Amino acid sequence: MPDSVADYPYETRLNILHQPLEIIDEKALSDACEYKWFNQTLCQVNGSVVRVAIIEGEYHWHKHDDDDEFFYVVEGQLLIDLRDTEPDQAAERTVALNPRQGFVVPKGTVHRTRAPQRTVILMVENAGIIPTGN
Image 1 (cartoon, rainbow, N blue to C red):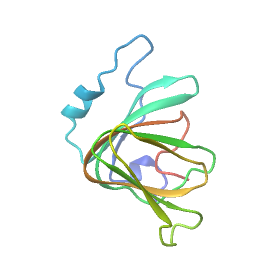
Image 2: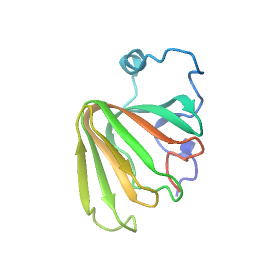
Image 3: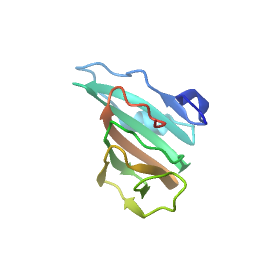
Image 4: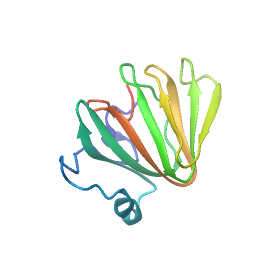
């Protein structure tokens, strides 16, 4: 099983792109994106980070033992498949988020995100979270 962000076929950038007092232009970044699955940390706010993701397709099943995740759809549609326990069980439910809708996946919840078309989302999570899960 892959152990780090580098082991997955996603373009994941954990560097903090903007410092305090800088304007963040999410639209310019999203419009310039050529990847099918792109994740960039935009800024840090206290002990959390705000990330933008431009996605199409599906992420792998995973969970975060110690961290909640907040997802907010800017454009497109985000599907979040949720399971209570083990990754090899069938999905228990799917949450569909449209633009201007958000959702928190609580720590310990096995989940997978999917986007049937190009979708732009913002995420808020602890700065030390491993995006691919643990």
